[in-house]
Figure 1 (cartoon, one colour):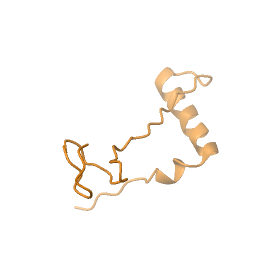
Figure 2: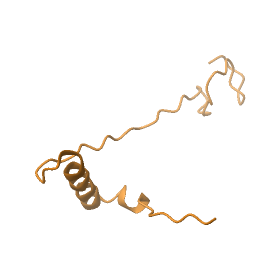
Figure 3: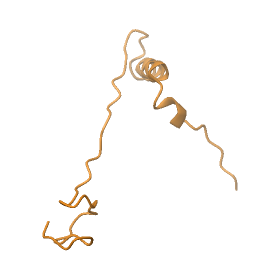
Length: 69
Protein backbone atom coordinates (compact mmCIF):
# COMPACT_ATOMS: atom_id res chain seq x y z
CA UNK A 1 0.00 0.00 0.00
CA UNK A 2 1.48 3.31 -1.06
CA UNK A 3 0.69 6.39 0.97
CA UNK A 4 0.90 9.78 -0.64
CA UNK A 5 0.99 13.03 1.24
CA UNK A 6 1.50 16.72 0.79
CA UNK A 7 4.99 17.80 1.84
CA UNK A 8 4.84 21.05 3.84
CA UNK A 9 8.56 21.34 4.62
CA UNK A 10 9.13 23.89 1.84
CA UNK A 11 6.73 26.26 3.63
CA UNK A 12 8.62 26.22 6.94
CA UNK A 13 11.39 28.63 5.94
CA UNK A 14 9.54 31.06 3.66
CA UNK A 15 8.16 34.01 5.67
CA UNK A 16 5.32 34.78 3.22
CA UNK A 17 4.18 31.17 3.17
CA UNK A 18 4.22 31.08 6.99
CA UNK A 19 1.83 34.05 7.07
CA UNK A 20 -0.49 32.33 4.58
CA UNK A 21 -0.52 29.12 6.62
CA UNK A 22 -1.20 31.10 9.84
CA UNK A 23 -4.14 32.85 8.12
CA UNK A 24 -5.58 29.57 6.86
CA UNK A 25 -5.24 27.94 10.28
CA UNK A 26 -6.85 30.97 11.96
CA UNK A 27 -9.81 30.78 9.59
CA UNK A 28 -10.21 27.05 10.25
CA UNK A 29 -9.94 27.39 14.03
CA UNK A 30 -12.09 30.46 14.62
CA UNK A 31 -14.35 30.69 11.59
CA UNK A 32 -13.36 34.33 11.14
CA UNK A 33 -11.09 35.62 8.39
CA UNK A 34 -9.45 38.27 10.59
CA UNK A 35 -8.11 35.78 13.15
CA UNK A 36 -4.47 34.73 12.73
CA UNK A 37 -3.05 31.66 14.43
CA UNK A 38 0.26 31.94 16.27
CA UNK A 39 2.81 29.40 15.09
CA UNK A 40 5.16 28.50 17.90
CA UNK A 41 8.81 28.08 17.01
CA UNK A 42 10.92 25.90 19.25
CA UNK A 43 14.62 25.49 19.32
CA UNK A 44 15.77 22.23 20.82
CA UNK A 45 18.78 22.77 23.00
CA UNK A 46 21.43 20.11 22.85
CA UNK A 47 23.46 19.57 26.00
CA UNK A 48 27.16 19.66 25.20
CA UNK A 49 30.28 18.76 27.09
CA UNK A 50 33.12 21.24 27.68
CA UNK A 51 34.94 19.69 24.72
CA UNK A 52 31.94 20.40 22.46
CA UNK A 53 30.71 16.82 22.13
CA UNK A 54 26.90 16.62 21.95
CA UNK A 55 25.52 14.47 24.77
CA UNK A 56 22.50 12.20 24.31
CA UNK A 57 21.26 12.66 27.86
CA UNK A 58 21.81 10.74 31.05
CA UNK A 59 25.56 10.32 30.64
CA UNK A 60 27.66 11.04 33.70
CA UNK A 61 30.89 11.14 31.72
CA UNK A 62 31.64 12.38 28.21
CA UNK A 63 32.32 9.51 25.79
CA UNK A 64 34.78 11.68 23.86
CA UNK A 65 37.03 13.27 26.51
CA UNK A 66 36.00 11.40 29.68
CA UNK A 67 35.31 14.47 31.83
CA UNK A 68 32.41 14.48 34.28
CA UNK A 69 29.34 16.23 32.89
